[in-house]
Image (cartoon, rainbow, N blue to C red; front, side, top):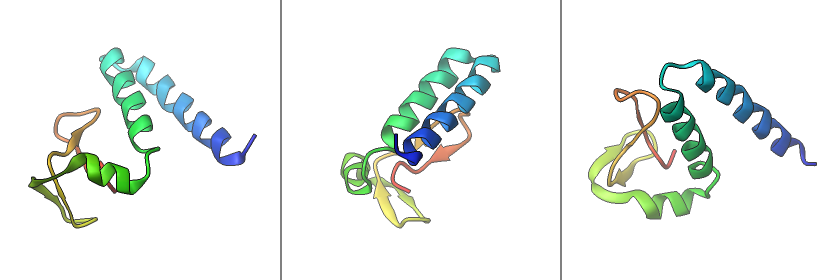
Length: 81
C-alpha cells in the first residue's frame, strides 16, 4: 500500500480519537470527515465549487462564495488553500 495513504489514514484516526473525547463528538467527527473528503479533491475542483464574490482569501488570492467553518465557529478555513 502506498506510503501517503497509510500516513493519511493514521492522521485521520489520530484526529478521530481526539474527536471522540470532545464534548461535541458528532459535530467534530462530521467536520473531520467533511474536511478530509473536501481536501482530497484537486485545487481546481475546489476553486470551481467555492468560487464567488462575497469573500476573498488573502493567502491564495481566490474570490470565494464562503469560508468553511470547521471545529469552532470563530475559525474560518479557506476551502481552496
